[in-house]
Structures are given as structure tokens and as C-alpha cells.
Length: 544
Ligand code: KIV
Ligand code: ZN
Image 1 (cartoon, rainbow, N blue to C red):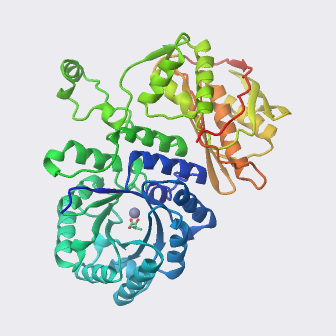
Image 2: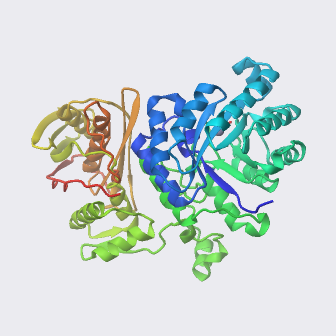
Image 3: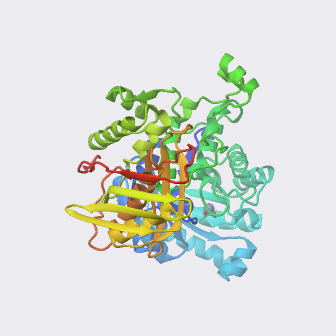
């Protein structure tokens, strides 16, 4: 049996379909490009039948991303299969992934089909998909709660019909490792032809066992692993691919298997997903959490200072986490700035680099030293895939004990300038209200947060604003030393995305920019007036 495990990424399908993680097609395309840099073997780009937008999104990824196999999901019926096959057709290597549930509860209650009907439907869907696509994957949804004899029959039928990959999903995260490993082993032994196709595992994390189950699956003979970046996905999520990849790499002595992944792209990939979805991983998240390589306890710090291996089983560099603590300031040149980006695995086109450097210099005028994390936050702001239709001009906010906050904001769109004043329950509320009035759209505010990109009272803060407009979520991020400025820019960034999607809006796809914001962790004055005139951004250019 081969010692290479294939990595199947379903961030853009199983991950993206979970609440709060939706991405826009432009973001999905950029994410797919980053997954290709990471070196995953398969990208499940979406579920093409689910909407025309989803179909188009999958098609754009199939046409625009080279390297990985591009896969589209289909239920076991001809229309789904046709849509998936059509959407992935432009890919260098295309795959259709069709599935049907095989557990008694799903068959009886959800599908209302007998086991024989399910078996026949699966066989027909695979045979049809095989006529339309060179590679066909078949999944038995809820496999871990299915009768094993029935599972054997369904898999045998799917292989006979032409499936080249058989996937064993733990759809509801019910399995425990020994049991899951035994299931995979027994299917490999019992199903005729199973040893000639690729066996895949797909574990959800409801009991926090997804990584353990996945590793048990590969130990038992599976050679494809399905999961998502940061473990996003339905309910408690899918298995976090970074955990599986680093476990295989770090414990190769025990497991004896390899992947084709460039692990130094793990951290940049994780960050990009956070930037697009506006959702950070928890600090103690394995591999990519903010504390994953931090050593706080005195004994640990002492050990690490003497020899990092005392408390570190992986190096931060191996996942692409910047390790040198470069501190930049207004005398820092472009070289040092570019080095920080390079260490963080961030690639910018010439125009974006120019803008990012200009923004960095602007911040240096307000702040003596700029830490690496702050540089990264500022640069993430330059990954905007959407035109900056509206830009922030002058603004002022007045607030204080016993008075109602008032914000005056000027926003500009080309030659058009709008200035509005609004009051609100709080300064941010007033600020957003004034902007909404100036730009002429008033989306629902779903979420708003600010945090410091690094420690310290003068830290660059990151603001994230989530807006809902006509059912779609739009995430805006921005960074600044001034939390109100960051908030306003983040709000405008989210609004600009919404406008870009409107009929007649400029939804030109320009690779590269996203906004991040700032939360000054410093002392709070309860009477604050903030006023600043922002320079107009340079005209935007295409980077890739
Ligand atoms: O969890 C699951 O069963 C799935 C299938 C579609 C593979 O996501
Ligand atoms: Zn799933």
C-alpha cells in the first residue's frame, strides 16, 4: 500500500456551507489559489446544483486554479451529477463527488427509500457521473451509523459502476477511533475491488475526535483524508487538515506516511480564511492558534531558552509562522518590510506592495514601533478583492459622559463627496449610521469586533464588521492605530463588497485586498473626540 496520503480540502464546500462562514465567489477563488500553494491534492470547490452563483463559483475555480484536482459535489441524481460535471469541466483534472445516505435513520426518515432503492440509486449515479467525468468519488453518507453488510454491498456496486474513490464519512462525528479504524479495515478486506481504488475518510468533530478518527482511518489503510482549514464545517466542524498534516509529518516515525503539502503555507492559509470569514480560530487551537507556539510558564520559558525542543515538538517555521521578532519603525526601509511579509508567506503584487508600504509609513508617523503582527494586520488590509467604491475622508466623533455621541463623516466616491452627521447610542453606532446615510445603503449590522493586533496601549487594532444585505453576509476588516478609524474603514469595506455585487456594480475581480482593524488596548477616556483627515488611496491595480 502506498505511503502517500492525499489531502482533499473541502473548506469551500463542507466548510463554507456552515453558518457564518460563507464567502463570496471572489474570495473562494483566492482561497482556492492559496490551497493550491499549500499543495492539497483535491479542492472540493462547491455544490454546483445548489445555486447559479455556486455553479459559477466552482466553474471559475476549475478554470482558474491549476495543480489540484477540482471536485464538485452532487447528490445521487442525474441533474446534480450533470451540474457538477459541467462546473468542473474546465479543470486540469476534474472529479465529480456523488453521495447518498446509507444509515437506517437517513434512509427511512430523510430519503424515504428502501435499502435496495438506495443501492440502485447510488449505482446509477456513479455510472452516469463516470460517463461525464474522468474521476468519480462516491460517499455513503452517515457510513458510521450504517449496517456494515449493507455498506459493503453499496460500495461494491459503486466500484463496479466506476467509482475511483470510495469515501467513508463519519457524518455526525459519532465514531471512536478504534471502531472507525476497524470499520475502514474491514471494508478494505470485505469489499471486492476496494484494494484497487482510493479509500477516503471524512470525519466530523462532534465529539472532538475528528483528528483521532482520521488518523485511525489512515492507519487502517485509507489514503485520502477529507477536511477543512481551521476545522471549519457543519456543527463542530470537519477535521482540521492542518492537524492531520502536522500529525502525519511530526509522527512519521509512528505512522510512516507522507503528504505532498508545503507545510510552510499552513499559517498563511489559515490567516487568509480568517480574513475572508471574519472568524478567528480560538487561541489554543492546535497548530494555528495564537498560543500554539507561545510559552508562558516560567519553567517552560526556561526550557525553551535552553533548547526549544524541550517544549516544542514542531517549529513555528515549519507551519510558516514568522519567528523573528523584527520591530519596525519609521526608519525601516522597504527591505525590512518585505522581509516581514516574506516570513509570513504573504505575496503581494507590485501595486499592493506599494499601497501596503505607504500605509505602513502612515502608521509609523503615529506610532514609534510597529511589531510584526501589526505589519501583517496592516497588510491583510490590502487584500481587497473588491473595488473600493467608497472611501473614507475626514471624520470626527464626539462622545462623553452624559452626552449623546455624534459622528460627522465624509465619504467619497470618485468626484462625489457626501458628508453626514448622525447621533447614536454609542460612538461606533453614530459613526456607522453617518456612513450608511452617506453611501445610501443601510445593511443590517450582524457583528462587530475590535481587537489589538499585538499587545501595548498604542497597539494597531483590527476591526471586523459583518453586515447582512439581501440575505448575504459581507465581512469588512481594517486596521489602524485609531479604533474608530479602523471601525469606519471596516464598515466601508463591507459596504463596498455589497455594492460590488449589485447589478451594475463594479464586481471586477482584482486579486488582492482585505481590511483589518485596530483595538487600542490603552486606557479609555470617557470623553473622546477623534478627528482625522485620511489621505486618498492610490488608484488600485491588478496584482495577479
Ligand atoms: O459529512 C458528510 O457525510 C458529507 C458527505 C457529503 C461526504 O459531507
Ligand atoms: Zn461532511
